[in-house]
Image (tube, rainbow, N blue to C red; front, side, top):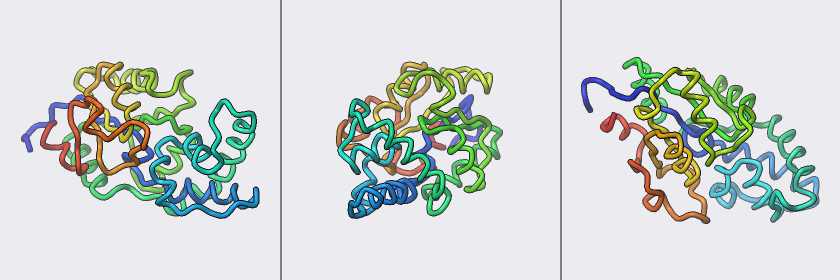
Length: 219
């Protein structure tokens, strides 16, 4: 590890990168499935889709896409269910707290950029006992990742040089968003790897990390 961190900031995707939210996302989905007379799904079945949030849960739980007529109504129901359970079993991934402590000890700002609604991300962050310098949610700009708008807003709020910022994510869209925002894209292997877009090695990221603290060797 270098004696001086050179990154302007380190930004994180939330679901599947910073925090393991799959158990609570799954609980919300299963409450909704139960209301529809369907059997619960186990968390390991749901995990590959958890990085996509409500869209992923409705896809695996009801075979729905945003183009389906029932999607919008069930999405609102899902979000209401999720709000009731989102701080039950969500945890930081192993090694994440150590990475955050190292960043804070070296004075490197860090933040969260997620397609998740900001009110959810902030509430879970408080529950987990972490204090990001910025949180940008999917409701803070007109565009979801892979559009770079949310990353650009985070850079503006932090007043940082984008080319010296790292963005960590567990999905291809995170890497695409970071590249479009002129940030350093970092793929992580511990998250919810979607079956749709291969693995992190195929995403053309600048770095692929197997453990959170491995980032410290590259800053």
